[in-house]
Every structure is written in C-alpha cells, then in structure tokens.
Image (cartoon, rainbow, N blue to C red; front, side, top):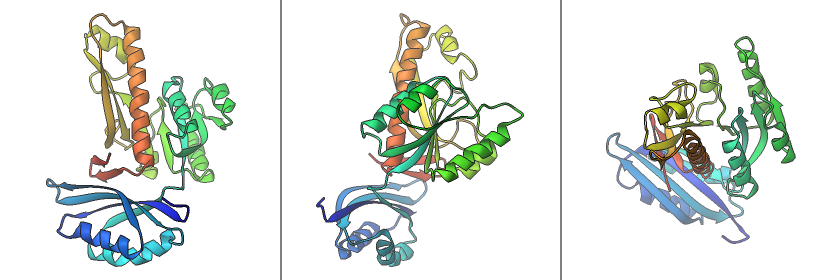
Length: 286
C-alpha cells in the first residue's frame, strides 16, 4: 500500500452462481484497485455465496464513487454488500460488572493496537473498575440496575450509544440480561462472552458445579446478542483441558483466560470485517 492509496474491505453475500468472482474482480480492476486479500465460501446447504475482499484503491477513490461504479455489478448479481474503509476505527462501548478479566484484556489489546477500535466509554452496574478505566483516560458510566429502573437505564445506555456514535457494544462479562427490545434495537452490534458450560451449568457458581461433576475441559463462547438468551450466532469458541488435580480456583483461572482470549478473537474478527451472518450461523473468514 503506497502513500497515495486507500485500503477497503468489501463484504457481500448473494445467491451462488457462476461468474460472481470474475464480475467483482473486473469491477475492482476497472477502478484501478488491487486485491490484497480474498476469501470466499459457497454454502451448499443454503445455496448462498459469501465473500470478503480486501483491496487498495487510489486515494482519489471515495466510498461514494466506488459505490456508484460498483452498483451495476451489485444489481446484476443481487449482492447484499457493504464497503468498509480500514482507516476508520470502530467506536465501541465496553460493558462490565464485577469480573474484570475480559475488560482488562480488551483495554490492553486496544492500547497496543491489536484491536482497531476507539473505546468511547465503559458502562457498568458497579463501581469496581472505575479507577482502572479512568486511569486510561476513558469515561466511566455507572448505571446500577434494579427491576424498577432497568428500562430507564437502558434508555440511558441508548443515549450514550447515540451521543458517542457507537458502532459496537462489547459485553465483557456484563452480568445483566438485555431486554428483548434493546437486543432488537442493537441487532448485530453487540458481542457477548460466556463460559461454555451452558446450558449444563446455568446460574450462580457454574465452575463449582462443574468441578463437582468432574468436567475435563472448560470453554468459552463469543456470540452476537439476540433476544434468545446466549443463543445468538457464534463468532468464536475455544476450550482449555483440565483434570482431577485441578481445584475450583484452577478451573476459574483457566476459564477466565479462555473467556478473555475468545472474546478478543471475536471482537477482532468483527472489527476486521471478517464476519458475515447466514441465518443463525456465521461465516468467519480468517
């Protein structure tokens, strides 16, 4: 990439037919663009085709100009498409309760440039991590939740999302269930992390109950949030092996490490525009 070029990511989905790749590539070439990464997937079960193209373009090429030139191809092949300028960082709110392992990991990855996002603020129903967050120069909003004020506090959250022009909300072990209305309002913009004992060990103290059952692995799942609790489209998962010699504390420590790693991986995939939805499933390009 030269100093006189810009870099974009094109994501699209459509009916799987012959000639799609050639048509898209020809359109890019006609606009003096150069493909630097390409990934595609044809889903035989749905008959849908998914593609991610990362390309450089002349500095003079704006997203609007690209869209105008690309429109005939998009129309002819009935593409559901989006263009992303890689120079534009996503704006994110992180939400957390008392457990700070995922929060701290996200703050570190962001500070070191591994996550291309700007954390506009941290929202919590507790004050536990206020000093830690404000030390980073990030605003901290305390929104305690009770059955009586939940609707009011969700409206306060939406006001922050609008005022801060937020693209993504990350639930970094935020231990409150978002209302169905809020989930629908923020569809595709909220990523959650939970341990992968679900649905086997729901509720309080899952690691203690897993220990009592002698589990041999602990895991984590990161997914988009939907009104169906903890059942949204999965972005990333991983596990850690444990055995009979591990204590409850060992299980908790390994679980927290896995949760942090999986959430970071999911957020990075989303920020790099590597995720496409296919019903209740995701296509995640490497």
